[in-house]
Figure 1 (cartoon, rainbow, N blue to C red):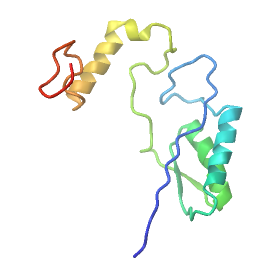
Figure 2 (figure 1 turned 180 degrees about the vertical axis):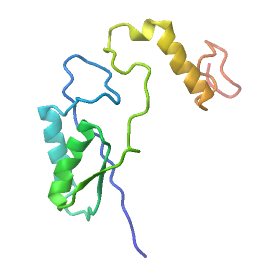
Figure 3 (figure 1 turned 90 degrees about the vertical axis):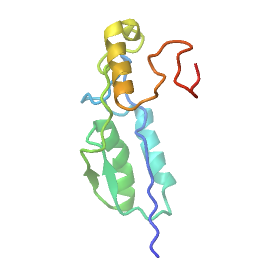
Figure 4 (figure 1 turned 180 degrees about the horizontal axis):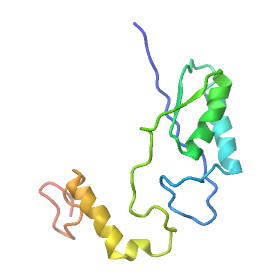
Length: 134
């Protein structure tokens, strides 16, 4: 019987001095520390039989995948389906008060409830669905 092991890696630290919620935005690359993280992740996989490296098209993901692919002599294959979820706060800065503005918050809460998220989201304190926590 053949045994397949799938190793999942999250991208390394991103250079983001403006603290932007980058989501799917282009132009966000790994920081120097993130590049080192990617190299160390590749080293940690030494001894494993890595035959395929798939990556999101996002720069930070590709930059994380490259040292792994190089270590095992395989190409990085881009899979467009490996992508960040959409985010109403994308492009906004952390700490700029975006979470206090009702329009984006309502969009996120509405999507969570319509999209099969937690049934108690958006119901207010003490109004959780039966069996849920208030």
